[in-house]
Length: 285
Ligand SMILES: C[S@@+](CC[C@H](N)C(=O)[O-])C[C@H]1O[C@@H](n2cnc3c(N)ncnc32)[C@H](O)[C@@H]1O
Image (cartoon, rainbow, N blue to C red; front, top):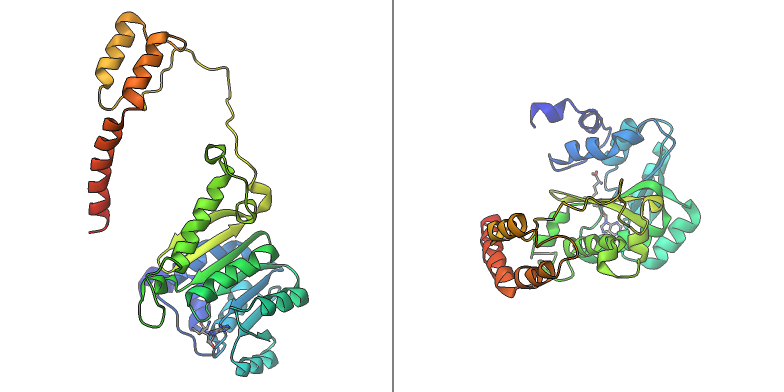
């Protein structure tokens, strides 16, 4: 373990946990980044995947006494940990009825962390069925999302992998942009932020921040400022025309013609795509 991780409070809570637990070494820096604001607050924290209870003890040490720590597992043995002061539910994270029962009992929660079975349906069900019950300011955290790339046991890569679902959520939050001309979905109205870490995906919930987006200007528009976005291929020629003849002012006929020729030309899109393709190749090497 690297020395910076060893200094983190969450790592100390992990090391001092009363029971066995195993985590990936990069998780501690992620936990610290996304969870430190919730320490010593009166929160409801839920973890799917209890096993020996090691992480439940870790969370209790980390969040402090005010937090209610709840565990969920399919294995009925997990119930034993209730004698240690945790609330334990036995159920299947892929089962909608289980979630109905769970949220009927517990009401809304602040944070739910999925360290359960790590299969696509299990991870996706956690997010889908929990989303209506996460308080504003809360989070859904899914661990071991590396399984989206693993064949054995997890049947991935697949169109229906958890990571593909999460990318779909990213598409959904963009519905808040009027550029997409799409209606807001339940996801786009609830999820403010999606963060991708190596093997952890975090959804931050805040319906108040999920409004339909619109452009705002601070002052009246500057007439002389021409956007050079499409100037990359024949930009010099265009700006010379502009400077010399003033042809490109906002309402001019020539500007419209030039726009048609230069902006909507499929040759430029083609040239762009050749360059982008090369960057994608580099990215995947
Ligand atoms: C990786 S272990 C959890 C480890 C624990 N969080 C820790 O760090 O100490 C995964 C647990 O998820 C439980 N599990 C697997 N599939 C499940 C399901 N469909 N619903 C609920 N729990 C499940 C397993 O029984 C197992 O105890």
